[in-house]
Image (tube, rainbow, N blue to C red):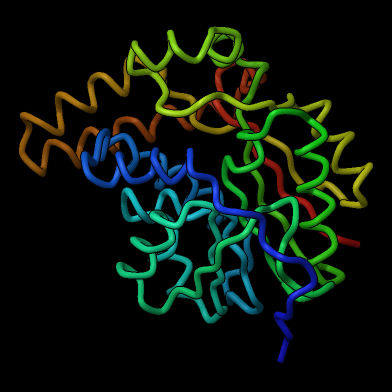
Length: 270
């Protein structure tokens, strides 16, 4: 059996993220939009992860599971033990209460509390793009490499600054974005596809696939999703989610890095 031992102490919980998570859990904003985000990430995992689900899998945050269904229900259907982590105690508490089979630990991705080569898979969807600098992204990638066994797989997404709308959002001051209701938390550093490719090579990963996901016009889609969730019946909400998924066909276009809101990579530890 793979040993999941401690090799570093978790960082202190982030009171900021605790406050953000608690507010979202109480209000449950943008539930329909969150469901679309889950669907996009699940489609990516279905393409890139082995169908038999063998091995221990780490999900690097539990925000999605706390404020919606998240990825855990689908991941738990496979035969792999699932470990989830987060820095916010409120998020951990809700995720543990919702999913009793989830092993949830408080930790910082830059100092993972797992032994070397303890894991087979790391799923990190939009976790590393909440830090102050690209050095923090590299630190997280080095930790992912350390805790993965040889042949272990990494599925990672980050905000895509090659998308002009994402670049504009990231350039605006957080107080303005927050007052407009566009983001509930400060935007962190991120990197585009070329820089991310170099970071993966620098930290010892072998890149298998690199693409962009979440291609619908986000600002418009979020606003429409709020109205559909509030006023439309369940069947209409389901049709709206299917409509949004049609935009993911743009991943096959040569302009995918201009329209996708997230860079997505599948990498392995040689």
